[in-house]
Length: 266
Image (tube, rainbow, N blue to C red; front, top):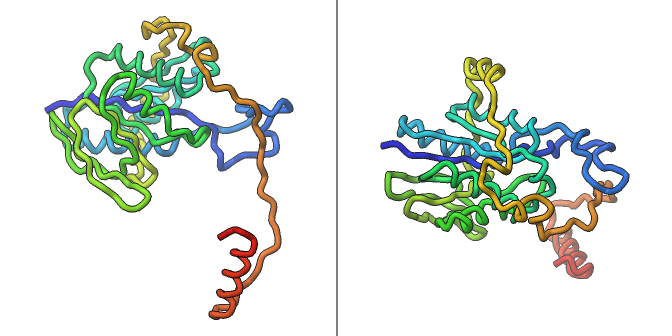
């Protein structure tokens, strides 16, 4: 049995290394000053795809991302970990896209691939935290979706069973293929790149696909197709304030509870 899997991925700023020059004077993000990484939850989604390929060797994995040409780095990274192929949607007409325009471009790119059995992606990206792109892609492709997945239970040529994490517990969900699944940080970490593949990827090219290559309505791309407008961005720095050391006594805990209630924190 062979499945055709697409993994949606994003190259994002490394938010663990935000310095004083992370913001421009106009309040926008200075992306040139920030190192970039493979979005963490997208890596978890890639690992889920690779686990399926481990059990079903004829399965193919294509990684799709949208961004500037340097986003090809994560395609090479994914291929060095075991993905078969990948490409970058890269065009000035994609610039400034919100989740609606992004999901439209991604869904159009997936349509060009023909029949796809499974689409996997991270729940959200660390530079936006909207968790909207995956579900919107599923809606545009008119396929079922399973969100907040933490473990693959079973998959065959007809259906998939996923364990998903909710606020008050977990549940197992079964859906027919094709389906889109978004994966949370609770899922298994992605395997390391293979050294031989890593060396080979340094020389291999990555396809860059423009807006013309996805048969898109140009009015639905980039800023033109983005109803969401960012009014202001602030660089919030958490300052250290006074702290209270509690004694491990019932009286101290009662005093803390009373203070929290008085300050309307509880």
